[in-house]
Length: 463
Image 1 (spheres, rainbow, N blue to C red):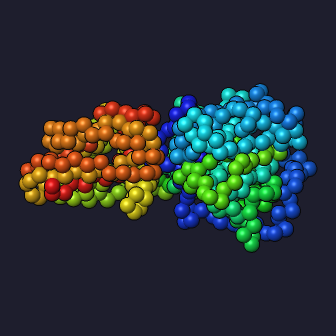
Image 2 (spheres, rainbow, N blue to C red):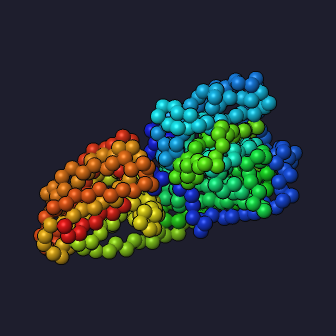
Image 3 (tube, one colour):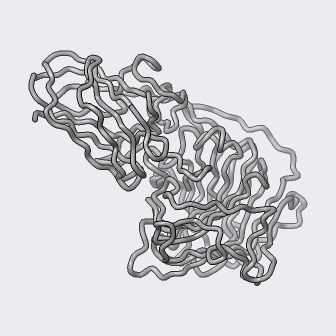
């Protein structure tokens, strides 16, 4: 999941998307392993000691323990183009009186949204570094549902995402009922580039309908994922490359949520039945009594990017700004490359993008930032500009200048329906003279979610 902290989403470069299969390990759970779904209790070898839990005992209709959980509310898409409004109403989150927490997704109009659900977290109430985190969960059935059990770094409000780190213990999407996913997100390996693993049930069996125990064992040497007692994936600091940073050595808090729709699961369709529930039997956290061993981190050098020359008429790939660093090729108010993987030594937020094919885009843009492009215009004349932009909610204002003069006037990034949903904005009648020129893409003012918008490319063609 893509985190949100203060009621507004942190704009995603291309959103919280599933990993490509090349980035995932896929494991098939043996049929006999499903028999372990009932208890998931820890063994008696003395390694693990219970330090925190919620068994969700209480009368039917009662709310979750406010000493352990708080409900996060809102309906702004949560950085993933989700369709629900999260509430703290008993209609959406309550105890069932049988020892379970019930999170219910409903089809109903509420605060401008067509669906409601709930999201709980332990932020400010419980957080822990390392240990075994596990929950016994029954996920809902149907297209468009996206339940998750995950951890987010306590530093989320100060470092932001993905700098704070995220550990997805379980994600499930209704359109792929036989699979569940675990993923790590951190600096330079977030979203589509996260470090992940997939578990698949045999013979097309669905995770929905039965309880399963989803767990991680997390320590200084890495993170291992389990379902019903069987390990299906692992990642460690030794896998990091370039400027990737292992951020999983600080306290994290717990999140449980049931999203409806979003970039990954897609919307509900005609076969989807409402209401649907995510049942949580218990959540337990253990500490490891064995001595921790420090992790060894081996980094591979980053590959220097190849930046082709810019020619007009033609396309300016927004991530192909001039070399020279801060104040020369660009100005970015945040020195960290939030997206990473491309031009890692630069502070521009670049992320993977599949708009018009596989490539890169620039996001998390702020007022006052700019990108410079040295270009050659091969023919004088009038030109038409077409830019590919995206924004969840109304975006901000920007302009393109040439040789220090405003070329386009103010241009607005519209509400395209999400950080992954790209649209064209255009302007005609732009006069350019043949010869070498310096273009600058300038961010003037921010939109609804404190971002000007996401930018993929700018195309200049004869008008």
